[in-house]
Image (tube, rainbow, N blue to C red; front, top):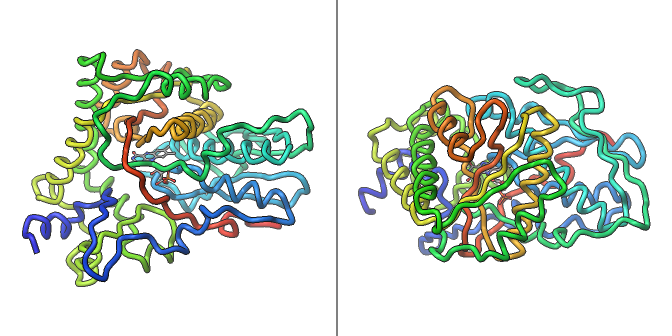
Length: 386
Ligand SMILES: Cc1cc2nc3c(=O)[nH]c(=O)nc-3n(C[C@H](O)[C@H](O)[C@H](O)COP(=O)(O)O)c2cc1C
């Protein structure tokens, strides 16, 4: 075994890896039950289950899938956040959690349209959460009304093809028509979007610098690293058992984990190869990323955050339709104190001074190799009353 690689993996350095590395007789493909939800929910006697079976394919920070639905009232879906699935270190005010409720709601809406249903969506029907915490009240109540004037949305077809792609992107710039389609897809939401590419070399360099610095900070901050370690799923057994979190199925990591050399209770030190090699890998991907996309809101209340999630997943679906991939870069947008520098820098760079404006999503954008979908827990895991 290559010593450098051994040390890197032993220190947990492959946290975000989706390497296709294989050893003889040992596959890095995800176990089929972990990705079965991507086959679709199949016919369902209750159409609401069909809708939820599509919505659960939405992107969610750290793939926590913190969605609970109550189907107790006919023709209604009441959505709650699963408060056992939060990320208090990296998302202290649950802003990304609200965005992730929004992505779910948007896919639910697309699925409803597909069935000729108008989804009447009331956000926070019992009042909004405070700016800093979430509580037991619902995030949305969705009433489904048959309506012959409802049009299906072409983005529906992209739900099954959408992926968060963490591979290296091609140097090729996104074409102008694709960028236009992405911008057009979010027009129904009160968000400002933008792109930067090679034509703005100075700004592009700034984007790369901030992304790299924010990632470095996250990796040298023990408590944020450990938060990710807690939702790491290593190997097919853990991946199939949890079907959430960050999947790590590289055969080499599995071997190290099996023999106790990958300790998920200890964050690697800043100068450990585990940290420095991961920073280097990330920098290489960022420095070859041809374009970045962002989504900014004026204000940052809970409904605004949810709507930002609705807009984001529409943008990602529109990108998917044009063959483009996205990977969110959340580190600089996070509110924990160590990120104050990158947070201020990205808000300034995007002409979105805080607190009036909030950069809700910032992603790298480009053409990338095809990848597998990520795990989902499946329909029944999200329904708590029938
Ligand atoms: C609010 C939000 C923040 C996210 N931040 C990151 C991030 O910083 N880095 C990353 O690689 N993926 C990020 N993601 C993508 C999720 O990790 C991804 O949606 C999840 O793992 C499920 O994978 P999928 O999108 O391929 O279905 C984010 C997603 C959301 C909705």
